[in-house]
Image 1: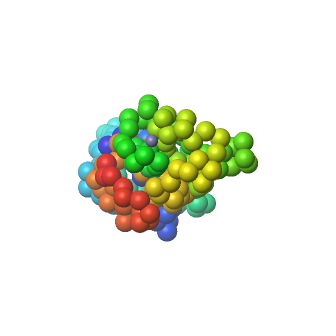
Image 2 (image 1 turned 30 degrees about the vertical axis):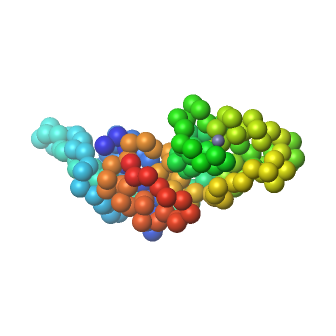
Image 3 (image 1 turned 180 degrees about the vertical axis):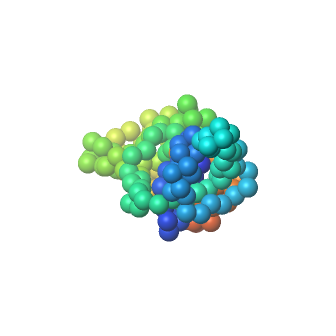
Length: 183
Ligand SMILES: [Zn+2]
């Protein structure tokens, strides 16, 4: 386990935490509840007798504080390509990340935003063919509607090393807009 999934007290995902940072939350007694079995065993503080305690860190923890919900605005190409399952949304073929580009459905030149709902994964060839046109103008059909990931999907997109317990928690709240690959 590389990272711990941190939730707010009501179970909304907040962010990924390094195991060391999670250990600190445990020792400060900020962990309200925890889930999952394949966690990590970490060394805690020393007691009066000079013995070091061991802490069992769970893969999913809900903690006190920091209750504000996560912003899902910024995103990298890697996250975009993962949202679209490495499929070019114009020709429908699967590509390696380095063969894909970020296509603005409504081109930036025509006032299109750099937002989740206006960008799709497109292969270089399709992106070039489309140029500075909308799909309608280019007569190229968009195979799926781009969507903004919810916080569960967003955290899925930002971590490539999600373990089963964490995946279980996240996928329960995935929207049905796209078929998501596990892991
Ligand atoms: Zn293509």
